[in-house]
Length: 283
Image (cartoon, rainbow, N blue to C red; front, side, top):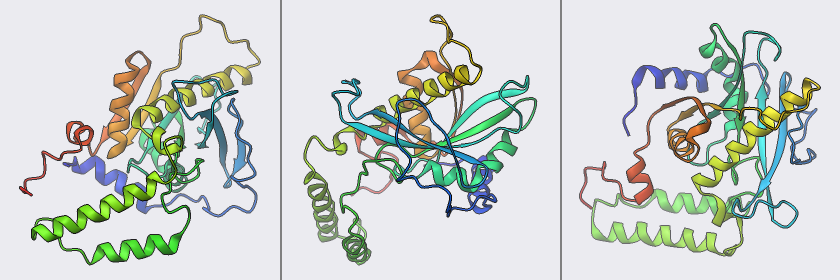
């Protein structure tokens, strides 16, 4: 994929220059933090706030009483002004892409840098989240089920494979390796989280995040949210595969778009067709 150098360079610098937040906290435990249908923040990592938001595993059956659920890990870097300040601009969600990269890690390392990039007439709080199945969100999408030895052995075996363009045998080896991994993931069965890790499901989770943020703001103001209150709009920064999530979200919920900035754009046609037309080599 092609990258717009100046902006991507700024985001690379974000990753290289960590904020003062410690990634190891003795005062906070994700495991001990109960997931909830409403957004409940807990102080974490010295200056951050963390939450686990409970969402349906299957958005086609959103009844949390009868449906299996997912706990989405969310972390907030608060704004430099209070929410009732005239210059407060709301929440900006960030996604590093992957797919499979952690938004909580990105925010811990670079929350203050994102805030500085957006500084101006408005002041924003920055929200990072781990997409369903990823990192601190549970259940995990892990074909190896925590078996790091098997994972490392598999990685080592693959490092010895020739490029798929070298000869036909190399292509067969790569295909066999990919097939083995897919069969390993299928062991969990059709009712596991693997059937619900689509970009569309994550986009629906994002709707839930911004709706629950809005509910919490009304609650903090000790006000009852009117039935005709305008629905909150998404403010979002997506990098690499995060651009595909942003575009998918905007296509599904165009009426909820506020401001979206994407960079390192994924070729959506390639990605959705599982065929890379942008790769020049004829395999």
